[in-house]
Image 1 (tube, rainbow over the protein chains, first blue to last red):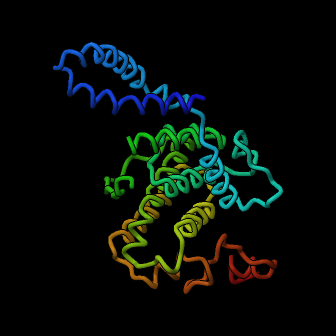
Image 2: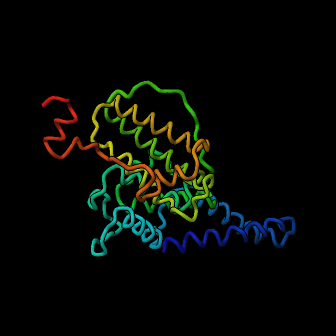
Image 3: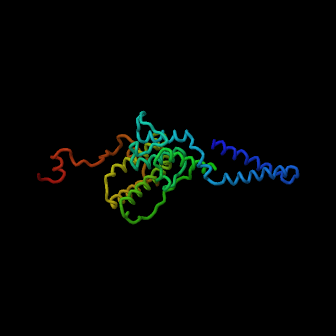
Length: 139
Length: 133
């Protein structure tokens, strides 16, 4: 539901860009006023990064992360890796955690700052950070 | 693609005050090494031979080899030597067969003694320490 709201914002932004070009014509301007107001308020709401983070983490990101974690720690198939699993539960020490983070950097083509990477303790946090960085990169 | 990582040569920093700072330096060194891996694979044409994850494993294995050390100054020295090795590799001062022999997992050209076991028998232990026993 949250993701559809996100996509609806992006949908309306290009439309408002086209209509502003015709703002000089009278009949369109009345119609336009409503639309530009709407677009401005929407634009303001889409600015803060809060909106991007509040969108749910994609399942495929979580799966890719779990895949990398499994390979790194050489886990057997019956050891379940879910979104909430902590790396230390799976038998990883601090060096393993850093190595997992580096593996994720390589996989997704991002660079994580050291302070943020230190906070990562579960698969969920890693997936969230990755999504944030990927969105910043493509934005 | 993220901006390519360049290894910046900084002068020798002062010794770490405690184990926490030494630990932080170890991780910084590890991160620098891992981020240089794409460059290394490019320089020595290792694309067909080894995957980046294997190189990461080799680096972490070398670090884990010395994981039992608790003195921050010793850790600093080990990091310094590691940094020296990394700089040599990135500067193309080594050759392909060196990298393959030392870091691509396998028998290798150089026998890895690992943790130097001082001889499994008492005889050998005494032998290594002195001539007379």
